[in-house]
Image (cartoon, rainbow, N blue to C red; front, side, top):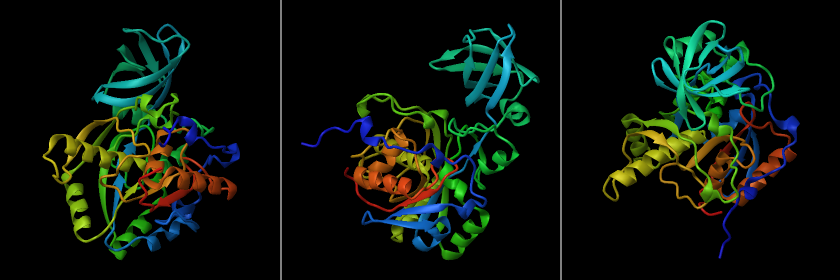
Length: 354
């Protein structure tokens, strides 16, 4: 009998200097570790990706746009606060993480960015319900800062505003970038068009929970953070067409995986058995771990993920635990750059078992 996997099965040693603090000079300038369908590893450049694709393939991108979600300020009582907007719930209202020496209670006023006021209405779990004095998106765009991941040590600047955003971002709402997409520039997208590689879009607004490690030993005890997703009918139609012509559905990033597989789960739960994928939207808490049977995704372009993270478990579910373990050991030994601003992987392995 196979033992149950625990969080320690997804740990690895990463020298701190391999955590990329800045992006490559050019979006396509990163390295690409290719894990093929025989679980063999190949050291390539991201510019090689086009040569690994087939004319009938469909690439599915997450078109979420990172908002300038980080604000500094103070309570009306004087204490400093740091606000990270997690989700906009109404035009002038949002759920946010708040860091302060003493948590603000309902009714507490906040002065943010020395520019506008807000008031705490209450809490929903770890998040604070805050009403802003104007449209949240407008105020963030004018006064907020790009919310770089916690392992990037510098303050966000104009360069980060541009590079911590995909070139095709259009739906504002994420507080973390869908980082696999950061490697694509317009010239690459044009090249794929010329090769006959189709593309489609989903939206998943990435939350700050994407950076959190799993803090329970048994995977089944983990409570997944919620993220809003949309899989439109146009993408459902593109997937059906790709299947009909014998092409692969290749997700660009784990967030695209979660959106597509969440739509498949929603379809399976609400439609008659055997019904094809349907358009879907809503909150997803889908937690993909080894043993999960992928319904939509055949291959994946992704960055390297944090130890003990749900995203490392997701890629292990696609490629197998041991192939991913070998791949990460190889990447460390070969001095690949890790995490959001780091290098990429192309995972073709169809293995569904650890």
